[in-house]
Length: 124
Image 1 (cartoon, rainbow, N blue to C red):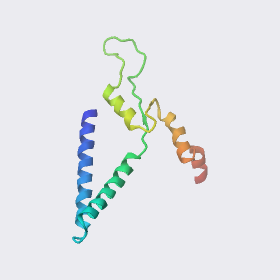
Image 2: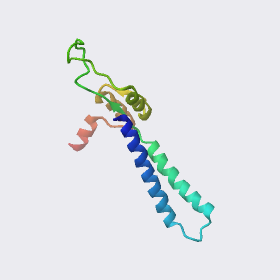
Image 3: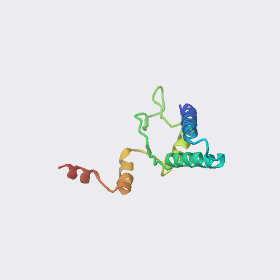
Image 4: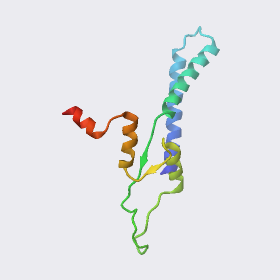
């Protein structure tokens, strides 16, 4: 699954970037010097990539199979594939895999400055 996600991401980004280049190329006046045209396209690409790169992601994981059962028969402990774990650590803002969403809420509250209680009181 992880490897398919990587392949999907590569193809998705290549498609988006190629479309962006084509759209920008079609909008450039024929009289514009090619170095200026290349500069315009470069700036658009850089802005799009900066936008994608700066998105903050946080990951949490819960699976009913993560427990302390005895290792016998079909009752086996469960773990995440190391490639997936490495990708999660790379792609997340804090380079962590949280055990629950409750661990992420304080981070989001600190970033955005509202707690659930404040949000609820605003609607009352």
